[in-house]
Image 1 (cartoon, rainbow, N blue to C red):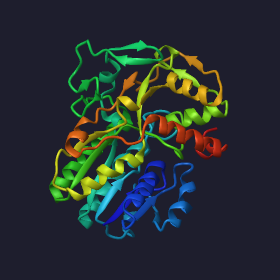
Image 2: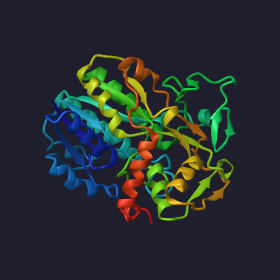
Image 3: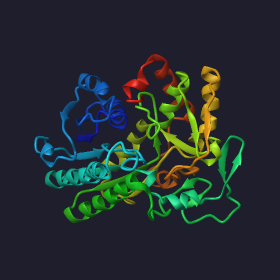
Length: 355
């Protein structure tokens, strides 16, 4: 089996490569990366030393695929993953669409030409922002908790947000590019006869992630807390009660390998997240950091931001019943790995592009 991983020098792409090689040493992996994400150069030498053939290229450029050899499967880990992308002034909306949507088209054309299967690492942010923002939650301790005694919309349960929850806009420009990519991928697969999997991932986190406030929040928070950098709870009363779950990318490899060996199986779209047992609020994360590093004050700003939501936990029950999958790395293991990495790399925030 020969696999192409796009965005291979990012946190997710490099983590998948490491875990796949450990599970299947004979696998042949090549990668493409444009190194646009600050810090991605850090992974180049490490991957090359493992024998990974790297191509410097951009998924937005169709011609950059012409030099790539034929493979059996493509894992798309290349994206601008920020929900604020295209609206925060850092990149334009056109750049976001070119990267996350036009890039997908170029990858799908490559898959069509080489008869390769395709796995899209999509996102929980394809789900409707108004729908998520209006879920009945109540503050319990240092976190928001779903009120399961209230009437809940389809696709919501005490287990979290399932694949049947609404994807009606607005979902953010980022979420819409991923949702459009999902539809195009399924259409390409049906039209041109190659297998496609859509894995909607929750928050991916772990040691070595390039953390920033808008992406890689667990790594950003722990590194910033350790360095006594300014931190602020934004919105929702400035309480830090908002909750997300965390998943280490290496936990994707068991199900990805099963999908590659079962190209005709269904369903094609599944959630893959840490789930309710791997969820923490920002306030709980601060408490964990305080216990680990000593107390550091966090500021409060009650002004809400667009696209922020109080509670999003992924329900991955479908992946469990279909593939026997569940996360293997606990939230405490993830946080401890990030903390030990932060302690060993004092300039990690600067490497990640945090000013």
